[in-house]
Amino acid sequence: MRWRTVDIIVTVVIAVAVGVIFWGVAAIWGVFELWTVAFPPLVGLFGGIWVLAGPLAGIIVRKPGAALIAETLAAAVEAVLGSNFGSTAIISGLLQGAGAEIVFLAFLYRKWNLPVMLLSGLGAGITLVVGEIVMYYAKWAMTFKVVYAVCGIASSIIISGLGAWLLWKAIVPTGALSAFASGRTTTTPRQHTTPNRT
Image (cartoon, rainbow, N blue to C red; front, side, top):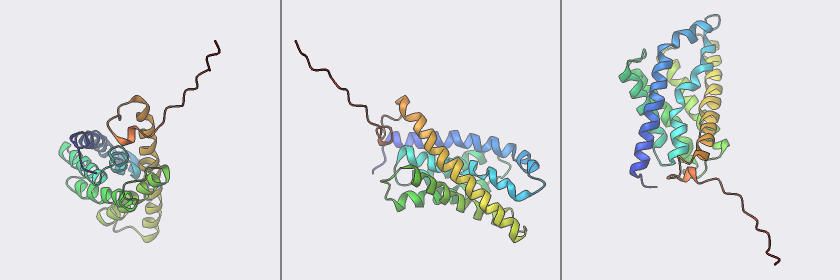
């Protein structure tokens, strides 16, 4: 499972691309909070956006540390571009990347099916809500915290777990992942030949 140059490059590309998305989402996060002003904990429904880089890099690169590195680097890109959340974004990225990474480690980086990806979203989601509650929502009532946690974890499972899985499935047929094991998981249908009867 040694890292190759292409593994490093693609991990960085994923991190930078998702980091730009993070920055854009951070810029309009106030809109999401406005939508949920009647019941603030519902903002957790959008939380899964923040943990996409880890699961996506994990399933594509399939190397130890890919999820952790990609999520942390994506958060760093967000911070450098001028995130509303400042340097705390990097701390969040490190925690969330670790949440996804632990799941892949638990399966020894050998299983990459949908259930594992959903679990990676779960792992990232748990670290997401814990970190966010500690850093931003510590003064909320316990009921609010519980609702936020449920919404944030569900969002992470769907957006980062299922979302990363669907993105990977969409990319594979293009051949862009031919240099990776993740791009060679589909088999070509067996061609049947008609016997020559001449």
